[in-house]
Length: 188
Image 1 (cartoon, rainbow, N blue to C red):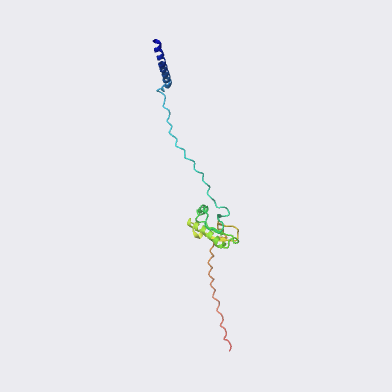
Image 2 (image 1 turned 90 degrees about the vertical axis):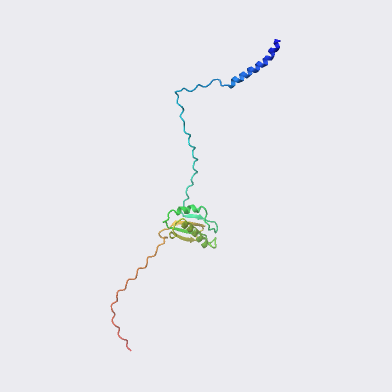
């Protein structure tokens, strides 16, 4: 009976061999040697602070153009555009400057051009005063001659500056006239 026992043992041995083979592959082949006792520990690097996100590009501050235009309008509009605020902020930085504000509206296009041009200039004046510019430093004008719908703010020039007329000098006192000779009596 020996052959029957050897036949039953063969599958069992095959299973045991396969299990040993799998177990051998699963364990590490060789352990890493421990570092020597005299070796220094690796330097601990502090964690770098996370880099701050780059600042968004700053738009250049708006500047008043050479012609002084701070607002442009369409039609008979008199409400200041939103972009005008930044320009007026820039102008209002110099509280001692004297400005000439001029509103424009074309007379041939608009029957109420005078009122529209003046309302535009006064709206700019109001905003500058609200920003701290003294009202006496602002001169308001309008024009209906030019074909433009805008408001300009320019420094007052010597000719455009308001000057106070000098007080008239007092008239010189008349010197006492020499005594006149008495008039002869009229004949009757």
